[in-house]
Length: 153
Image (tube, rainbow, N blue to C red; front, side, top):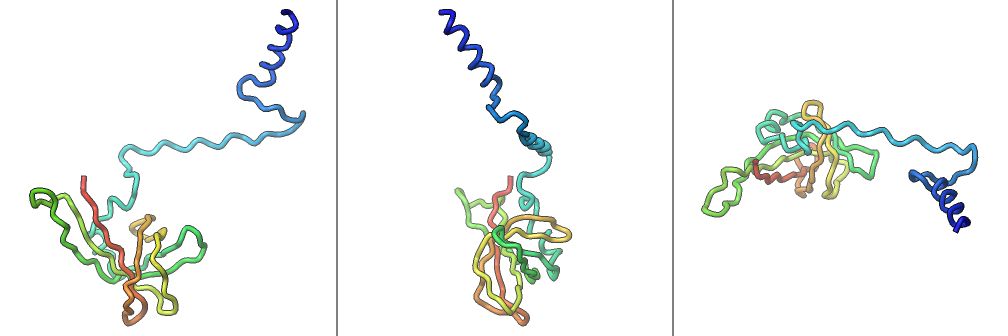
């Protein structure tokens, strides 16, 4: 029984506290820095605070669109904000819904496929949005639309 007692402490020493057996002198990378806790007042999705009236104030301004898989960007101008009638819920009421469309004008040289883009704007910040080509061209370029249907809390 004394032989078993000698083996157990040796095994526990090498595996104690989740340690790995590494070569002597080998350096282990430091643990990643902890992320700061999210502010309880900050929304999880910054896009959630952007209403149609906020976008309406930005008509004529430029937005930078990037796909997450590409380093290139597309410069698009917001040319219209269209109010859409929400579908009515049970009982014929839809007061807690906001529905609108954002119409963007992109470059004439290229036509882009529908995709979710990372968007940056000088005033509105960064957010993600799904944009679809309309198939129409304006005076300056191809047009794209993002339809927003959201239930307000």
